[in-house]
Image 1 (tube, rainbow, N blue to C red):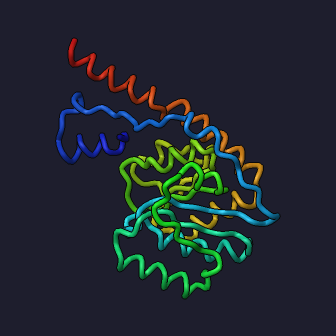
Image 2 (spheres, one colour):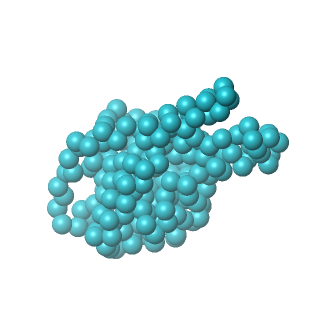
Amino acid sequence: VSEQVRRHSIEVDRIDPARVQTIYNGLNLEDWDTAPRRPKASGEFLVTTVGNIRQVKGHDVFIRAAAAVVKQFPKVTFSIAGDVLELGYFTELQSLIKDLNLENHFRFDGGVTNLRQHLAAADIFVLPSRSEGFSNAIVEAMAASLPVVATSVGGNAEAVKDGISGFLVPSDDPGALSAAILKLLSDPFQARAMGAEGRNLAAERFTVEAMMNRTASAYGSLLS
């Protein structure tokens, strides 16, 4: 599902390079065309991340970054959407939010049933993962025209064009993550432009049509 995973298969699993192809997951962009943006009062923003609550997803880094952001943008809200898969980690996150006095700025939305509607309410999408293969959530955020801040792990750099459709930051670095979020909050025009560029990239590379064309081509090559 990403070149990073392909390289791992070749270098670590010792699979013949000729036998490994990358085919990105695709989505139907038409499913993301009709969700209206919700108006917000001046200074209000929603920064969201989507991913089941596990330590590998880096939600603790997201929370620590949020503590720096709210000092400059006191009306910003942060949300985490995803089911709790590691209860102990979830408890740690709740304690961290309390310790950093972020109770009025954070919410856990659980496993959302309408992701399009959820993302339509957001202004910025963040993926603070410590490890990824290829994140479908990033592509969905791009389809929703959101600027993306993601860690430079796994296949994230294959989806996010750093400085064009969002920002890539090191993993486990709350300072870098908060700095990227602050750049977008401080320049809404740039944030919207990056969101539009992300939408264009999704249309070019991450559609169902592109995925199926690559899959059909792979089978065609084998059959010939």
